[in-house]
Length: 57
Image 1 (cartoon, rainbow, N blue to C red):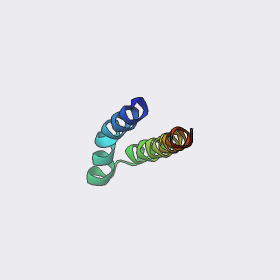
Image 2: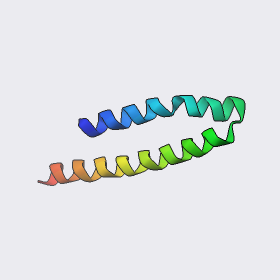
Image 3: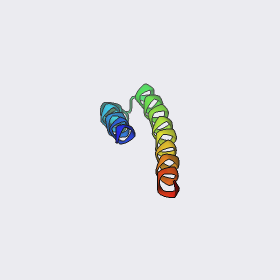
Image 4: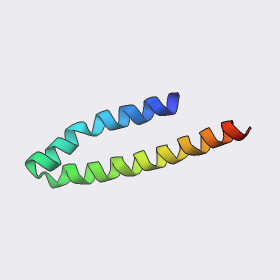
C-alpha cells in the first residue's frame, strides 16, 4: 500500500502543473508534467512487478 500512496501523492502534486499547462499555456509546467508522468510510469511498473511477485510467491 505504501507504493499506492506514493502514486496518489504524485498525482496530487501534479494537479497544479496540469492546470498551469492546459489552462494558461505555461511551457515550464508542461515540462514538469512530463517529468512527473515519467515518474508515475516507473512507479506503476514497480507496483506491477511487486504485485506479480506476491501473486506468484
